[in-house]
Length: 309
View 1: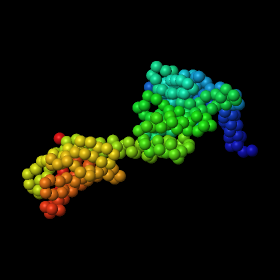
View 2 (view 1 turned 180 degrees about the vertical axis):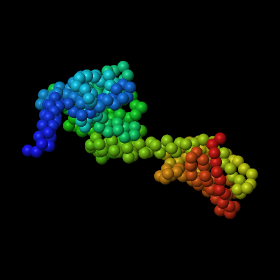
View 3 (view 1 turned 90 degrees about the horizontal axis):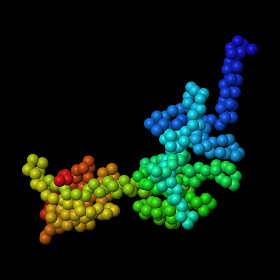
View 4 (view 1 turned 90 degrees about the vertical axis):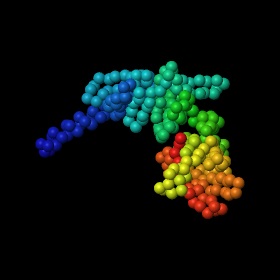
């Protein structure tokens, strides 16, 4: 055996034994997040070893470079990570009536650790873990939470699958998700999560965007670039889906339509006076309207711009 190996082997053995010791104790690499938002790395243990698991009411934490152990209740930290599992501390209150359970984020409730599975935009997917009384194994059920909502919704009911009625109630603003649930097009938790992101969230953002066209606009209809401004009102009084209502140049809008499938919001409508029909189209960009009007009877094309009053 060479001199180099004589030094290397003992170090490898010590390292291996240290790893075995840490694994035996059940600690995993991870971190905690303090109430001040600081991430402290180290070794984390939140449950006893199988087969008869105990979920600790206070997680164990050994900071990097130290040997002393610290314990934290849910209300004492913002969250933690143990191996590949991530948890957040949230004030969860459970209510039950006639075997129906509801879950609320209540500042007056005690904090619990919820396992975070996914967060995308305003929607978060958690697991509430517990010990099954029949076999002492760790069990769980999924909860969804929409940002800004006081309530969380339980997604499944054991072997019965998705809690479709509760999900329809919770996501009541998204008609397409309600229909998909009613038609049983969605069967898995992840399918509901992804459907909301793909269909409901994009729809909600687009709906919010198109509302920005509402208001009293001041349109400059000058006949040429070097002419004086010729200002006329364009009022959008209501927006519903892909249609809108209002007045342009004193005439009510007819067949007013919106197209929100592009990077800018496009619109088109018609107006008429006692003699002619006028066709108008344009788009909204950075808070400003850019449009063009065409009248076949008068044989003119008029570009214009507009700003909110």
